[in-house]
Picture 1 (cartoon, rainbow, N blue to C red):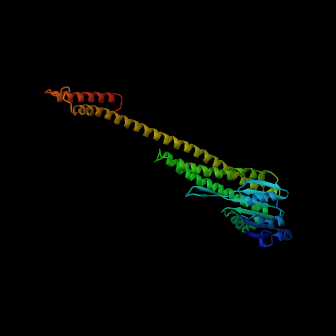
Picture 2: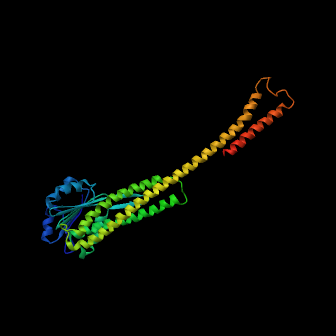
Picture 3: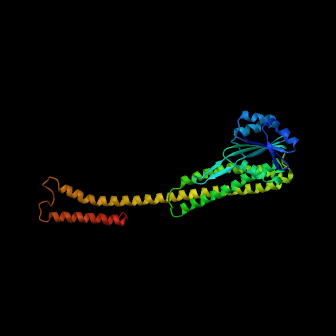
Length: 331
């Protein structure tokens, strides 16, 4: 679906273009460029663009299929870039990743969006409000998109750092020993997905900042170098966050293991106490059970002090067992 298709010249938006097959000729005629925005187009919808702008077939396939790695490629006079905007949903700690495929020519820029991101609309509005920057044409659009995307990366790293601080407080603070592994694992998984969007973009930005790229003039390199610096900073923060999550997960598992061992030791101690008292209780139970049987020929049964002798014997045996268990630290 085509979101917007407009002609720009002399730093101004001139008019919307409905016939894509003649868009490039109109741009050349008015010494401007065409800016087309699409959302999740199909192969049939891309046929008009392929005919009117002579787009490379391989790049078209990548733009339609989505799920591409961030990259920068050249096809003759066409520069093709893929970037991945991100958005952090804080309440569920999820990094939502979108995708932008950008075709850049001397007289046109085509932005294909997959996913939910407002960056193309933000950049269009910002450049339309800045005629001086818009005069630079398609390179200004590419720079604006990359700059916004990388700024989002830094915002997401800041949000992840806040969640990391919260997790550290939980692991090492008031609730040590509790199992936080599920939350840590989920956040680590999101950081890994975030890394796949950021780290591969560093090389394309380096090429834009240091090499001669078709459709991108050399005077714009300092602007792309600034974006590259921010992307490197974001990549470093992601690596640091991932390493910290690994350390926190190991510490959490260690604390859980220590707590489990403590519980196991306590349970073993309790079992020893129960076993010791059961052994002590077994002595009077066995003797009284024996004397309670219907037998007449039982030692001391008919003597005057037999009951007290047996009772004293029971007490002596129980006391001896108690002392033995105390000596072995069972009681």
